[in-house]
Image (tube, rainbow, N blue to C red):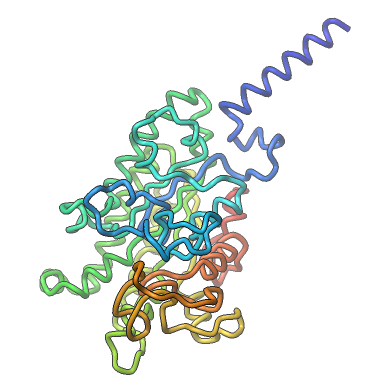
Length: 369
């Protein structure tokens, strides 16, 4: 009996140690069935920024003021470019994790336990390329986000020791970026003189591919990608046309970038042993919603909910702006960003969507892979 009891005590101690340090490993998932992955590391732009830009003193690319966050649990702005939660929040919820905290909020405390469930490096205004946003410290471009992850990786390897490899290989690396690069190209005569649109989108995909290799070299194996949506149908683009129609040139090259990205991902999967990914066809899902909004419960696909002027897109969502009483029936929250309702649909589809929307597998299958 004594031997039995000692074994039980040892088992309890052993289990508690893993709950603290290795509990995020899928091989020990029985103690937390809701938690599907150890962590989420997020990279991208304002579509999934959860507050990094709040910590950039000189940046004006922020959402830390009303009416952003009007539908958040606290009813206060959080730095999310949304009326409430964004896709990063919903993805974390779906896999049983808290939202990955902003990297800049944790930077001064490298031993913060919050690192163990992931970190968000996403920054409003960020692009694949290092543009003026980096020079002016307006946002954290992808290269900076990846280099910051490399630092975090070293810290976590020290904390987790021999379990680190499994921890990273089971975690999700979510990447949502590229819209600002496309907007930047069509808004710059200098960029258009330097390259054709095809050359530009091909370079976007090639540059992203290089950053993904760095992530892979530092433990990343499971990637979640969101392709560009119909960004030419954002209120910021429609307001430029007297007819309020979408900017089809921007949409066309967004789709072309998506093709280049999917090709790059297929190449990477064949080059990098153990890499797996789920690609979400944001473009197609947005197209379906805009063409048949009633099927999803939407009534307004052109105008922003929050802003001023034509389509509420002449003045951004700032404290002096007005906002719609029913956010759930609007596709766009402000002149660029979707509402919480759209973000929820996106993540529901990312998790369990059919092959027409998720390629080659959805996130639920990616987690199980």
